[in-house]
Length: 315
Image (cartoon, rainbow, N blue to C red; front, top):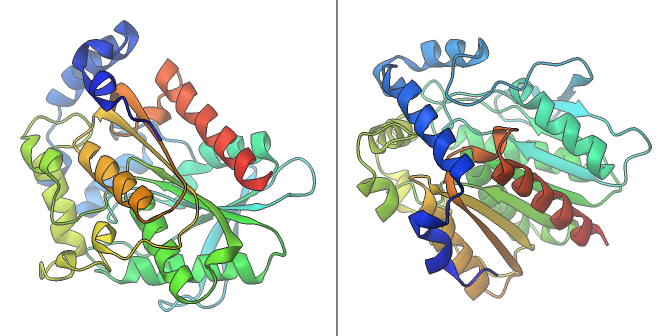
């Protein structure tokens, strides 16, 4: 586990490439109205058209929908990206988007690359979105996808996601452990997740500046998924508060220019304190979603970290 956090988090440790990218992104986003000033359906449509803050990665040919049983909201769906040969394992991917926007098919590029590089069948879970479907609809759907992945494959399973997808990965892992299924999960990839929906210090102190996220945008997401404001105070929605003992090895990744920095630092600390194998990678200057910007060296390093972690989990 990384220990030299003071060095990593110091602003001067970010590369010139990263700082230049951040300045350009900051200027571009300053020209747009923040997403929390629009209805969620408008933001979803803009994202599907490639007008969001993060690069659009699909839909692409080579990834296909598959219907699965067991989802409480009706027939569930997963989007499958196959490796070139027979799969050696299954990677259940859970997409981000603040539980409110985003879709499995928008991550086809990521999932296809992961399948190609690791030899795993990558299964990306579709789940119901807030505010039409408040919590715990998202948890129910991702748990159904995880159970299907375990029951329909006699292969090792790794679960991973980004942002809200990392949150749902952690929540799903706790539920599988409690159901006696935790031993089948060989590892978790938790990229820049939100783990405390009450708000961690870095999320609350960030302010109005939009660098993919901002404090008001995060609050907008929190209120859409938990409109009563009650669920966020318990471990079901805020897994930072959960009993984390007996959980799989986990890779945590986050950038220092992310309002959710503390979410990852706090969760990685609790993960390790609970006796679980913990790997932490902090990208100097990395914005929320930094690994999705292919041109950045820190993005390439983050993807390499995931590949190496998966290989170690399956060794």
